[in-house]
Length: 147
Image (cartoon, rainbow, N blue to C red; front, side):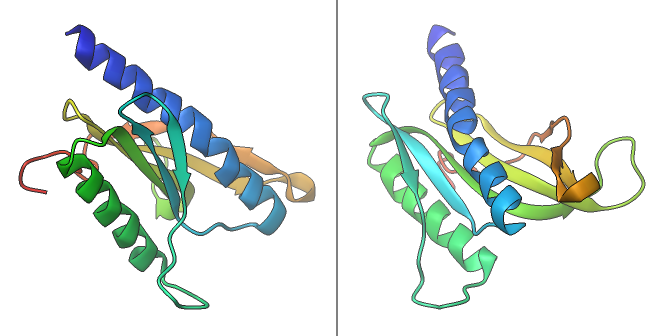
């Protein structure tokens, strides 16, 4: 039980470390390419980007590259947690219309696999407004035996 709560804490620490970069890119460029990070066995957080050789890559291709990298590291027990951050369109709870959102697909060694979703919009004077987030209890399943 202690191990599980520590890993959940690490997952939140990883998300808290990575999320501000997505917000910064949105403020500066109104978009961002998928990126990620992981928590090494010693607790160090490492940020990651992906490159597939294309000048204008499809987001899904970069997401797939990051997930594949995480699966390989997880299978070798090199990481305790990982996350991939990307832009999506979603209908937040209690709303009727789709809107832009930052999605964080986060996984930990204890089997936690979740997506944190943070809806956002650009308000007055193009100011970025990130709304309260919510979770979807299905992530990438990086640490699952069938992944």
